[in-house]
Image (cartoon, rainbow, N blue to C red; front, side, top):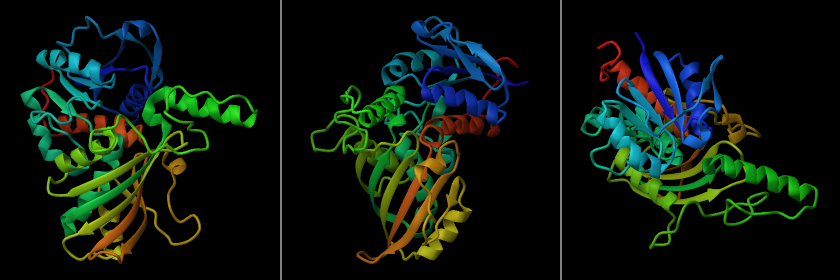
Length: 343
């Protein structure tokens, strides 16, 4: 007997991707329910070869639902996740609302699967920030081998990380540039078409943005609190796929060849690294793929035991929807979930 799954935020980019991935991976679900706000009630969304009619989150009964994949934003999650969890349904939340709660595990299955057992305290599991998810998948096997002391990260984040509005703005502005129409700005602080913006989320007191802080805080929580992390987060005119230039300093020696060999064997990683024209991955090749790609692996001679990496992944998949479904699979595979319908 399968599970009953609810997807909250089913009309958004990530919600639709969650439905697609549940179907692609053949998740053991007898029933999948698509939920959103009242204004989206009745909207149709695809689930494999089926069409689901969206129901309203408000007033929905979760007492017979096993897992809720939540992708409706932080404020919605803050209000609803505790209520849903109290009904015995496990919430896997894609927002930042619960990531820093000590009673909520923050999980990337390839990295810290054992921490998932802590979900029972609130029946909530947090999905990391899109940039963090792909980063820690690449860092984990290297950290186990040589112990990372410091990570310097520069992100190149696609507009889909800002939702459908971000994608629409890049498309509209690009078209306006080509036909010499006025370029209107709504979603981003500066023009995104044919430009890059070193600003994602709000500014904090120390001059960092919240996005940069997330990468630091989440990497420490998921991987190791001793690692020193600094980040510059940049929005780029790419529709799907986040890229990261990563500089690492290790406690112990590690060569570029050793790193390649380790990453080739690591779960979730795919090494594409040839020092020749086109011998590396760009965001366009990562779109629609599940892997975290690593390219441009080379030694940094400016520090002792240093490496440089180029890390790329589909932010809607590994950065959000795929990771959430993998967490659900982890609960099932480890026998941590009691099927309500079976009971």
